[in-house]
Length: 284
Image 1 (cartoon, helix red, strand yellow):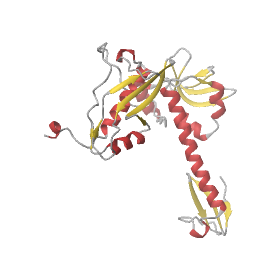
Image 2: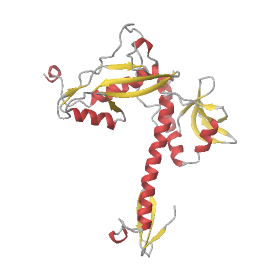
Image 3: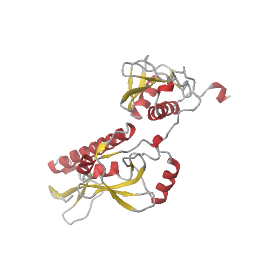
Image 4: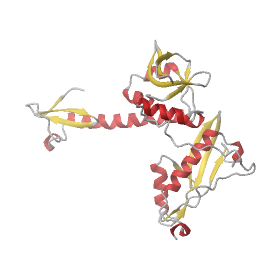
């Protein structure tokens, strides 16, 4: 954007920060205190805050589409594409065609020309599907090959689709099992630290559980890990991972789909990784 007057100076936004130059055009290291409350400076700071929130909201929306494997109407995608925040969130994501096969990496969305993709041969192609699918990485059969190809192309995804941690449900699974103990027992000196970690990772805490709501194949599933609901300064530890349906009923693990399983395990592992009391046997 251009420079706007602010007292005897001019200000603008650069990489999300307010910068200033004097009458001679020399850029200053910081905004002088005497114009800190100038309407132009205040307005630019408010704009920078709004843009930061907008970028976060766009990225959150795209990650939600991916995690829930939601089909996105092509017209909607083409409508938001001119916005740099949406482009940043959507750019280089893997797109699958209507047959479910990988079509390529998303580079453009034009109302007239369709989607611009880099296909698996490295060629630029155009397709125009009615809906656009941004699959969760656990659903990509050739994930490792796609990761290698992305590195070769220098692709970086803000939404973290290809390089998101994934967990696959074991083939041999107890049909009656209803919880996963792999990341239970992660001990924390104070409950507030574990609750804070859950919030930092983007998970809500409800009724003593860190929760991750998911939608897979049209069915609502919630992954839950016990984190404690007692005094915030008391010791606590992570519990086993459970999955519940919309009514709160615990589900058998055999009924859990690949995306819900992966995201639930991802949450449990991330919470467990923050433990600050090592197991006595390990410490010995």
